[in-house]
Image (cartoon, rainbow, N blue to C red; front, side, top):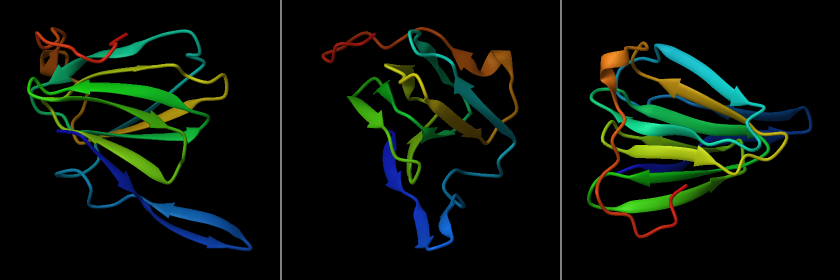
Length: 128
């Protein structure tokens, strides 16, 4: 199941430095970010192989996750917080603030066949 991690952050009078390392298997092969998504829902899939790390570097958003056994929702609003999604975590991102920038780090290159669009059967949380 996904997990919320507090990233190592070093604060000083010169600004803050937040470090992401050794949190997903393998190396980072793909980086992308979502912005301008204020009134939209993104995601709606899980993967066969891909691990993703989500960091809202500006603004905020909600992430719903379901691995077929357990479901959770997270509110990302701190650039020193990272949500690690395992391949089996079906996920949706929504409730983006106007200034939201959601950074995603993946351990796999984009491959259409890695995506599974069907959600798991049950849902107790108000899923978008």
